[in-house]
Every structure is written in structure tokens, then in C-alpha cells.
Length: 114
Image: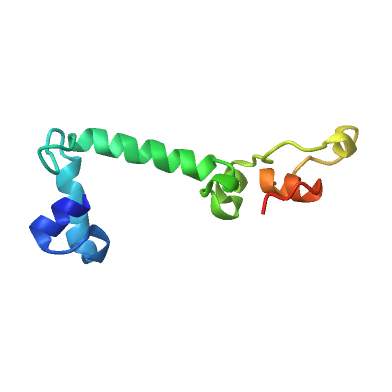
């Protein structure tokens, strides 16, 4: 994408104004249009982009995505399971823990993970 933008517009994609970025993305989104001869069609590009976005939005933050565990908070996922023993028998209140990733559990257990 950056190579195409550099050749066609003289700038990397991120350096283009929002209107030009949108126009390029609309063009790439059309089935069969290629960014360049060695790159796949736009439909495949957007399927890959969606998959990678979804993966990073719902993965454990230790891998670099889901910053602030926002994806987990959105769907009510508690994150990496720790010890739920204290909550198991509290049937009078809903169980709604704050999400915790692997790094938080490693830190609590003194295993580093920094």
C-alpha cells in the first residue's frame, strides 16, 4: 500500500490527507482492483485487514493489541482465567470482574512478565 501511494501520490499512505486515503481505500475495495501487479486483489486485502484487526482487538494485550483491554471490556470477557474460587459461591451478585491479561497474572504470581 505504501509503495503504491509513494508511486501514485508521492507520499506514504499515512502521510496523505484523509480524503485521498479514503479514495484509495475505496478503489482498493473494488473487487479485482490491484494495488500493484505483485499484490492481491482489494477484496482479499480487506478480508485480511478485518481478520488482523479482529485478532488484535480481542487478543491478550501481552501480544501488543487490545490496548487497555478495550475489546474484552466491550464483550464482557474477563480475560485470562486466574482464580475464580472467591466468586463461585456468590450467587446473589453478578460476576463482572475487570479484565486481566496474562501479564497481570504473571505479575501477581511474581513471575515477571515485564
